[in-house]
Image (tube, rainbow, N blue to C red; front, side):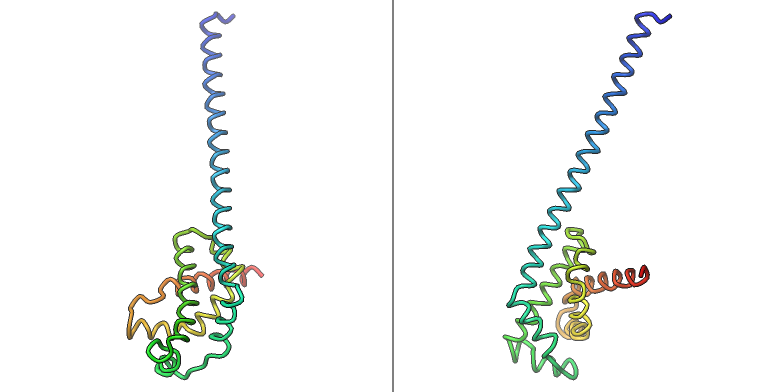
Length: 169
């Protein structure tokens, strides 16, 4: 038979165990809630970026630089679209590429999900780099060694995800 001291010790131990269990459940709940809040904020941020990128004026500029601009080499590009000779065209191009670069920074810092970027903007990002990557590399060589580095980073991330998707199909 158990005496009062033994019963008290068992009740106390059970109380501690219940307290630890409740604390664990509360922490787990808070972590889940925090993860949901982070995901919601990421989605909101991305949708703001997405809305800006896919507005009528930006789409018009993007269509022009992707589908109408042509050049033979970097020198030809720079003469036709460079800031010294055509500030309007260069500003249009630089605005688009800088925007993509900004998304790259957000992906690198894990502020937005790269798979979300891939699903909604991946094709456009790949198109841009594949058309202008050689221009960017020449800009780095001639002017700014780190120009658009996050733009290239984002392109590489989108290509990785595209390749992973191709393997699973």
